Amino acid sequence: MTTQTQATQLLKLIFKGRLDFGSQRTYDMVLRHWHTRIESYFKNDVLFKAETVFSEEEFAFIVPQQTLMSTEKNWRSTTSILKEIAQFAVAGHVGAWWVLNGQILDEQNIEPKSEKAAVTEFMLGRQLIEAGKRIEASEALSRAIEKYEKHALAYERRGYVNYKLQNFNDALYDFSKSIDLYPNNAEPYYGRGKIKMQRNEWESAASDFDYTIKRSFAVQPIHWLARLRRGECLLQAKRYDEAAKELRFFMQRKFKDDDPNSRFAAKAAQMLVECEKFVPALPAATKSSGKGSAKSKGAR
Image (tube, rainbow, N blue to C red; front, side):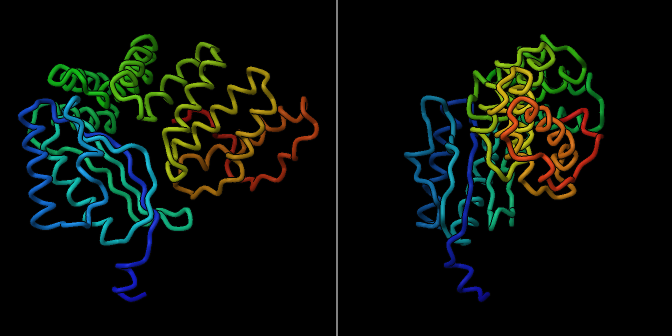
């Protein structure tokens, strides 16, 4: 493929996210920067118009969940300017995916990486989670929230830590607070659904996993984890037809070996067999690819 063809070929581009600037002063600075860069450099190559993505009421840049068809030049220009304005933000992130035939060709997780206290404490919290230091991670995330009380992502990550520490009431509060602050983020719905599963609140958990599915894309592992969990909840709630539908969706997906969902095909097949006991007309679970193993406990 020639360079000229690459520049003009329409690509499937996915965007979603939010950046919080925290004050009128910073918001105004970012907006001026955006207009200056568009006029002097990017011209018409950026996919978003300022009036559709900047919210003065919330001092934020908000990209609704959407899929666009555009060119590689538009992709590179748009992700470049998003990286620039992200450095003014006190919290948030924007996800961007370049997809071809269901495969991710490029993925950008655009977020602030500045010296602002809320940013550094949040990044430290994530690093401590990865290092398995959960108590220290919770403390760092709490400091991030103290610095910026509307830090939806810090609440979600602290909820995850509390879930792992089996502080389920605290985790439920954190996930719900994250949802209140940023209801379009998929992760806190998933976390809250897992807590409700612990409590055998199957209907309510299934609803949270449905929200997760609707607020994520098929290229994201969490989308399929939520389908699996929703299927499990619907099975427990004796809604067998609906459970089987979710489980068939999951089993028909071909996961790469490094995808966390690849571990759960056997679990999905077993649950579909349970559904078949009550709805004999369902397709046989043996049509599954058979990937996965019984090591399916302890999902994300």
